Image: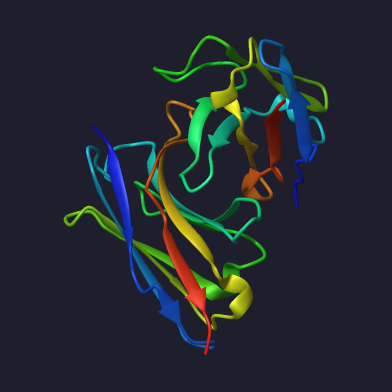
Length: 121
Length: 107
């Protein structure tokens, strides 16, 4: 049974750096084809893909946010960490992490519950 | 960057068929995934790789993909199908891309 859960601050100030952790179980991020991605959703708006890290440590970023994002993994802890610098109120959103298996071509088949991050002074 | 275009809203009466489109340049050459999201909940994968269903998803949900349009079809629509639906693809220039979402209203 695959589960993912996001954790991190619920409130950050403008210009601060956001650090979110995705803790997962039921799969290994050292298995070929597997990846964990981050997706966000501002209130009332659409989903937006942010970043993804693969089993081989290949890292992919949204072109529009690439300069602000860093994604890392700790395979031994079953965790993926996303950092986003220079936070702005427009970054207020629910942030999700999700599992992908490129070998199965299923898209993001398992999602965390999401964590709401508010950016405000 | 690769862009996916969805209609903002689709309305259908219970028992009828809903069709939600997702437009993109030569999307027929890509693998399209569809997600259902109900208020306050995380998205749920309902169709993957154009037309396959994850286990537990009713057969009423189906997908197709050709040319510049992919379509999610929901047959015999129920009140519980009311939700936002998103299409998604992987593109070599943009990586993972989501459509803007479609709100399905069951009249």
